[in-house]
Image 1 (spheres, rainbow, N blue to C red):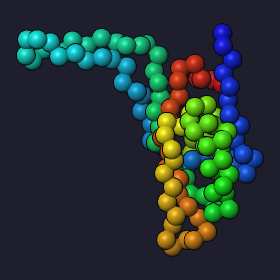
Image 2: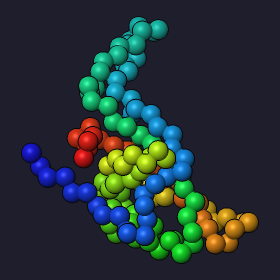
Image 3: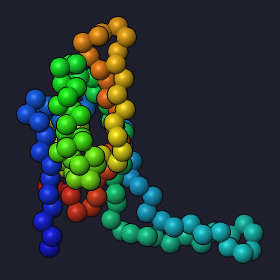
Image 4: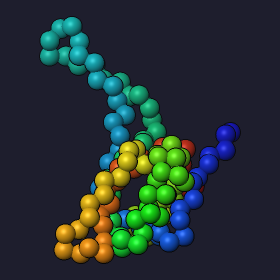
Length: 126
């Protein structure tokens, strides 16, 4: 069995997201049949891949740390890392794309991060 490399998180970040919306990735293939109105469906895999949209507001002093976590430690989403759901449960996931960053108009000392994450079946329980 291959060793799974889990990227470290900067010590200044606890990895906890304030908002969290999750769903399983589609695990079936749907094929239109030649005869109209019929669709063949078959299961692609029995293991579910988990997809998450999450967000958090951080102090502006953590901007460089968050960028380093994504760009360097996680190799821009190539490596999984440990994150926390809003209930504090830690899970291993990886970024599926670059984070969206929005500087807050009312609070110049904070920015909002929006990310998409995924968890592959082999990472459950790590």
